[in-house]
Length: 212
Image (cartoon, rainbow, N blue to C red; front, side, top):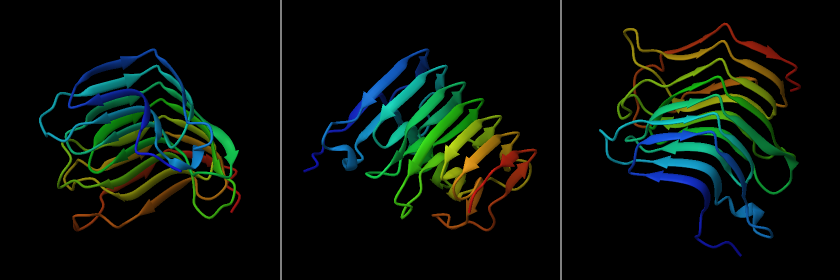
């Protein structure tokens, strides 16, 4: 059975700083792989005004649910030049490579994310996903630029995420997305709290070999 213990390689809670040039491996419990409680790197700051975190040049693999994750509105920073490698086709959980959720914000750029596939196809793994990222709550408009995403179900997903009108649109630009089993880039509009419009720019991306 699953327990409440989270397996986290590097965890910043209520803190700021630099996470650089680490090799993060094996945040997964044998026999409990479907519990979804293992992450390579997690930044979790609830208090708005916390200084930023830079996550760069790390190599993350053999994790359970999320490779690199930032969550809560106080989390702000940069996620750049990391390599995140999933388990490949697996039957026990839908992994995510890089995740922003619950109104965390970051510039996600120049990462390589690959091999995230939930083979039963009832749920989808994502290379880069922004989930419930509201401009009414986050500190700075996120962006997703110049990343390479390969062999995933979803390449890049925005699920309830948006930018701000008047020059602060959320940018998805200059990414290379290949071999997505479902969608290369997917936008789902269900922001919470509700806002009028998503204000997202999708431009200059190269998307190839989507299969469904």
